[in-house]
Image 1 (cartoon, rainbow, N blue to C red):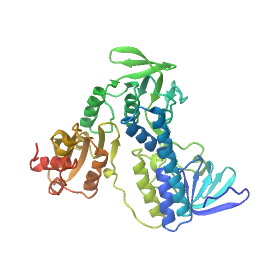
Image 2 (cartoon, rainbow, N blue to C red):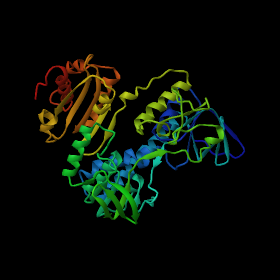
Image 3 (cartoon, rainbow, N blue to C red):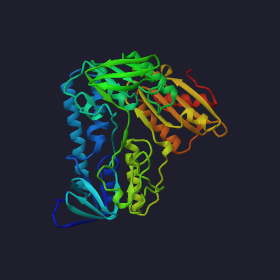
Amino acid sequence: MFSKILRGFCLTYDVVVIGSGPGGYVAAIRAAQLGLKTACIEKNKTLGGTCLNVGCIPSKVLLHDSERSSNFAKIMQRKTDVVSSFTGGIEFLFKKNKIDWIRGSATLKTPHTISVEGQTVDAKQIILATGSEAVSLPFLPFDEKKILSSTGALALSSVPKKMLVVGAGIIGVELGSVYKRLGSEVVFIEFLDRICPAFDSALSKALLKSLTHQGMTFHLSHKVMKAEGTTLTVQGPSGETKFAADVVLVAVGRRPFSTGLGLEAVGIQKDPKGFVQIDGSFRTSQPNIYAIGDLVDGPMLAHKAEEEGIAVAEIIAGHHPTIHYIAIPNVAYTHPEVAAVGLTEEEVKAKQIPYKVSQFPFKANSRARCIDDEEGFVKMLAHTPTGRILGVHMIGPNVSELIAEAVLAIQLKATANQLADTCFAHPTLSEAVKEAALGLFKAPIHL
């Protein structure tokens, strides 16, 4: 049931979650499953936060449909329909689990009291799950018509003739890929000397080569200095250059969203980057107030927030969950897809861990050849003395799905030999993972 804002009355709960994104709504559901009277405060008109409304879900619809159709109006309508089905699904789950949705903006008044549009809500435990927001450049404020955040890029009324993308991280390359497929000329301006720097350098190089071959243009080691409308002045190794386009997508990162929450009033501390500081059990400096997801330090990933939401609900209920952050995957839904889990080769070297590396190409995989999608490879790193898998890095067909078996292997502290000795169905793309494992301490069969 959804609560109504009753002026003059006080609503009391065991747990109140502020924010209904992947971390927040999952935390609320898990808390309710554990028998705690639970409410979720959300200021927007729909549940689901950035991920479901203007992030992960709509972008994946556009990525999928833009590979199969050029009808922009139909693609955007299907995006809207899919988003509505998901947000409505969360409403159903809230009703099913008897979670109250309190609509409005939340402000902490005391460690146990929240004000929502003038209504007082009391909570024994509070979970902060307000997520993050796109970072703009000082001279490029978002108007979501010509200067776009990812939100604006998902809501354009027509396909621009030319798009400049400032930032070649995962969000930038995914959305740039969408509009390139739909007919835009897409040009990237990236401050660093590589794209998608969170990935192993082998993946970054392979993805850059592939996207360039698809017709996207990248200017690496370039910095945007100023802007006049949608004309950017950019400093690069060879001097200043002007770039003009119909729209500019700024995808330089995200920051925790804590505006108006009243954190300072209740003594909750943040670090210099604005992340809420927590202990090993997600507690803030107020022991009954927890923080999860993009609001705290760590990878800004929906599935990371979900795991933290489940964990903090179980902690409140007296359980002792564990999250293995080394086993949290990262994915770019470009074509080819990119996926990774564990340590990169650069990180292994920096930690001076003795290791072996193996790489198996999809062009030697029978299923990849059957479906005519042979680009990419699986790269695997293992600890030399023990054989324990340290990291798995993939670029190629359906690797967003294949990465799950590597996640499980790292979660269970499996060795390359154990993975190599496992029987995989034939013909499947997943056999490339087995072959990469074979290449570490034995020899691949099909290479």
